[in-house]
Image 1 (cartoon, rainbow, N blue to C red):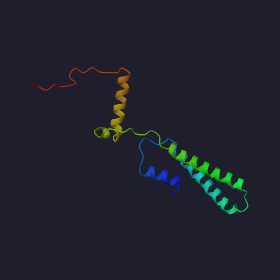
Image 2 (image 1 turned 180 degrees about the vertical axis):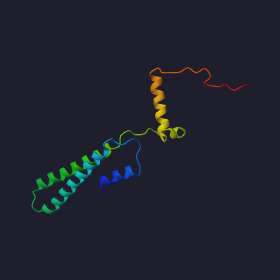
Image 3 (image 1 turned 30 degrees about the vertical axis):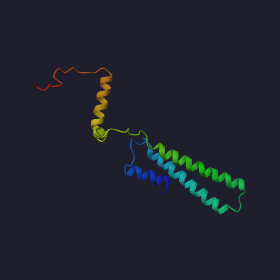
Image 4 (image 1 turned 90 degrees about the vertical axis):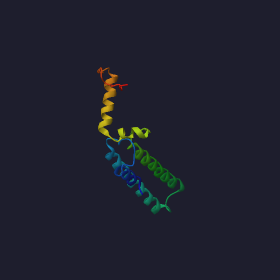
Length: 127
């Protein structure tokens, strides 16, 4: 399986934590282009193997290896933030975007000193 297909499958099946790079489609296009170039170079290498010097063959193989490294780095760059390990009783928050947004907004406002004092926020148990 190509790296491009592997990454597409991860995205389609949502088998990743965190978020995607905003322009991930462009990165996917770049991966596809680099994989085509690598395949073309491998075919050319096979066709010309008897005509190339050892040095030329080694240089082409190094270039192909560098393309592989670049493809892998691009594939990893698509997946940004990793969701932290969260206790099971708090996992619902990360699975509910509206609730998470509300909590983040509340924390931001609290950090800015935008607090509201409610006298009866907590009701004590009657004894």
